[in-house]
Length: 120
Image 1: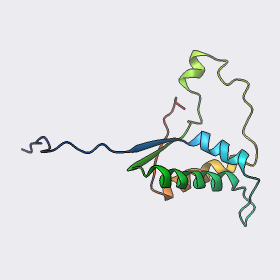
Image 2 (image 1 turned 90 degrees about the horizontal axis):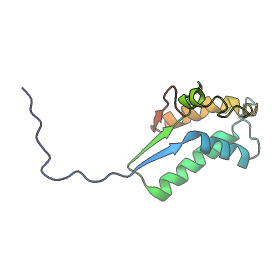
Image 3 (image 1 turned 180 degrees about the horizontal axis):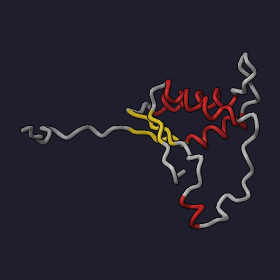
Image 4 (image 1 turned 30 degrees about the vertical axis):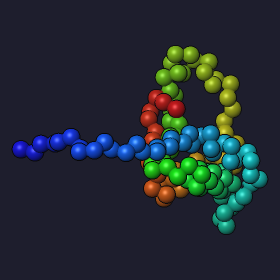
């Protein structure tokens, strides 16, 4: 039988940062003029998103980063208030292909990606 003992000294407080991916993505998209990859895919939001994450790492020096992504499905807020974000338009055409690229970039940096159905 395995037993677990209390640590002899308290664990250090860790510096954890949670990032709102949507906030970073939309901010980057609107702040940087359209940039395209060699195959023509828009990447300005990806570039800006990565730049902001690197600045965050440099400035805050966290022990851990987790990036929170909005679920593509409706959330519990939609059930509580059907008018919630009802008038929000679809994202710009140039931004749509960048969502998956941002997720890929986040995983490439070995940051945790968190996305829960029903939440944003």
